[in-house]
Image (cartoon, rainbow, N blue to C red; front, side, top):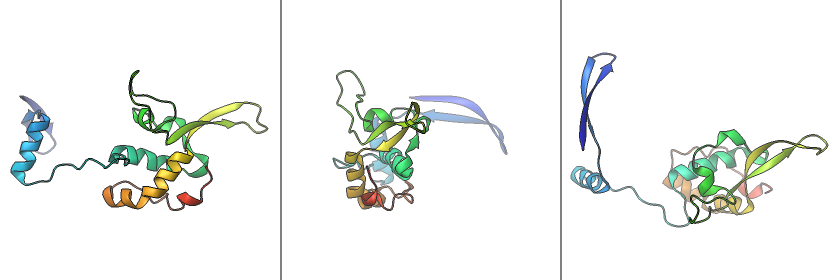
Length: 151
């Protein structure tokens, strides 16, 4: 499917743009025609680049965890404890959890933070080098001592 519109370019002025919507078969045909390899799907139990990037942010936050509002979208449905992406869907992996932050003295909850669960910590430590090899664009500089962190 194609559509045409006009956009404003900072140097060229008004430019006619042709937009093309491709199906999976169309993308596969274009890649084959250009001689480009297809995107590799991760082997199970590895995460996609997007989910690994989210998990790396949580792991990089260290023992204090990541602010609750720092994660949005669908990531918790795939990574968080107790989530499902739909009513009859497969449960999430349980790699991260929202944990309460207590006030001094433990009298009440002041907020929530995302932290790795023991399962998530074990997964990240076990596959860290493989993820770094597969997804070099994901920043993992803050994830150096995963095996030493308390869960």
